[in-house]
Image (tube, rainbow, N blue to C red; front, top):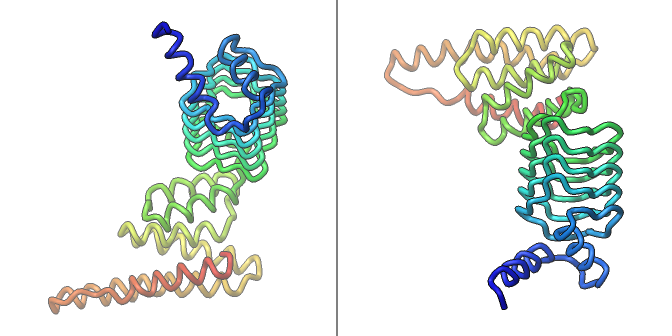
Length: 260
């Protein structure tokens, strides 16, 4: 057997990994790799990790639950394709036509989407955190806020603030975001901005009639001032102070509990 044929078979076996043993699926995978065209093909659950599928025509194809982790789909035609539940982590979808595609529940974390056509695409339940080049109009202020909270919980405070800022760009009166950003700024040691955000959150919560949020904002602003005074005093006496860090942690848990 020639080495070239052996390499082709090895690649084919890799691409078919995880595909149900149905002849038509295997034939469709083979058709895709040999002709780079497979309109309306059944590629559900196909293992296409790292596959080079740039400029392929997969119009209307069934790629539900397919594993396209880090696949190159740049310039591909995926119009009206079913990509529901597909894994597209770090996939290159730049310039791809995803118009009318079903991406419900798809994992698009850190995917490249610059220039992709997403008109009419269904992104319900899709994981989009860290996706690059995703049009802002497709992401709600609530989604940016949720990503910010996730980054904060993982210790990425600067990343959290970046998401909070994007949430406020979309919704400038988003009270919960100001409160969350206050916590983040305090973690970074920017007490002045933390207090300013807490005060702004208090005003907005009051206007909304949200007493829980208003009281949490007041408690945070006052706590920051008191903690700084206590820390200064502790430093003068040569003792450290970690009481307010526990307070911050408790308040953060409280905010999450009340959905603030």
